[in-house]
Image 1 (cartoon, protein in one colour):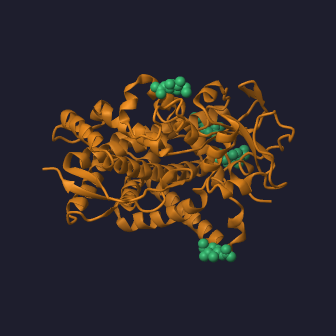
Image 2: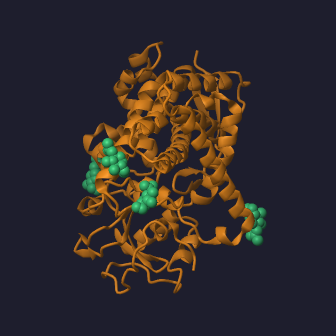
Length: 454
Ligand SMILES: *[C@@H]1O[C@H](CO)[C@@H](O)[C@H](O)[C@H]1NC(C)=O
Ligand SMILES: *[C@@H]1O[C@H](CO)[C@@H](O)[C@H](O)[C@H]1NC(C)=O
Ligand SMILES: *[C@@H]1O[C@H](CO)[C@@H](O)[C@H](O)[C@H]1NC(C)=O
Ligand SMILES: *[C@@H]1O[C@H](CO)[C@@H](O)[C@H](O)[C@H]1NC(C)=O
């Protein structure tokens, strides 16, 4: 039996009934594995869902192992879906189950609410006190790019991952990550862990390959021991810069809970920030007009001065650029929710304990919600209703996940530094292919060139 991490591990539940609710979709291809062979053949869960929704409509079902899964593929259905489980952040839910952390679903909701608030406060407070730090890291990157010979190709993904790692580790865990050696070590663990869990489902092959399994488990252990060490160093002491861990330490959490939350924030924060920055810069290279509009706004709001937390609120067009980046790239294409109680969508009953996927990647390219969905056009978010649609999907407003909120801020600071000093150019003839995992990234390195704005 293959291992379906998304739910099999965390949601140790009784098997769903096979005579499902009449929702259109696939019958299991394999008795034990359900439709997993079809998912693997589609290369990614996102691409599998695109095909499935195209064939069967906005509400579909399929089988993860012996478990029925329902996927919603339109904003209208999403609005109808009564979700009794709003407390859980879908991205965090997936990541926790992939890391095999207990999510204590049936536990005390008061406690999990408290824990979630603490996590969000940690992100908010660390952003407020680290704006200058992120500006400094952005300026280091700018200096590096300025020092390159004209027309030199810049490996965008690599540089953005490096920048995101430094930003996240220093804002989450403090100054011990000013040491490049620490960041490089962290990156090695991060890459090893993410290469296994990033796909969003485990197909069981990890357990059959001892080399891979050992690499993964060693990386996880090393990462945990790094996080434990940092936590221990900061407990009970005060530092002049407030970081994420400090907020967790002020709460009423067990050591295990602090470890898990720091792990989730470090892993998800890095990958989301790196890819938001990569896609934003990449899309800017494809549109001189958008770049120019962004420059004008930065110049008007910031002049030659530094960016501050208050000024960020005023950079409305920048926010539109980032929202359109999330939409066009389909930054996180899948969200998962567990249907705690029986629910309904569009005349159909969704049995209790069904795993409900939100096919965000499908919804983000749906032409009935987004005219010319494949066009990168930040102007579409001039309309309040477009922004509202994005909020419904959890990419903006009160439902936005904390890691994404963090990424928006870091990307805004980075763009404010880059766009005021540089023109960003595409490399001619480059074909950008996409890898859809839990977070969407370019399949190969994305190359750009830069030149000085005089
Ligand atoms: C989840 O609950 C179990 C049993 O109640 C407890 O042992 C464990 O520490 C909890 N895990 C977390 C992360 O709170
Ligand atoms: C096991 O994983 C390693 C590392 O990814 C790989 O090089 C090797 O080919 C795999 N072995 C098998 C039998 O698949
Ligand atoms: C702290 O957590 C413990 C165990 O979860 C709980 O019994 C206690 O009431 C909590 N204290 C406060 C002040 O929240
Ligand atoms: C928002 O989504 C709804 C439902 O799909 C659609 O009818 C509407 O046109 C969308 N609004 C905008 C501005 O894209």
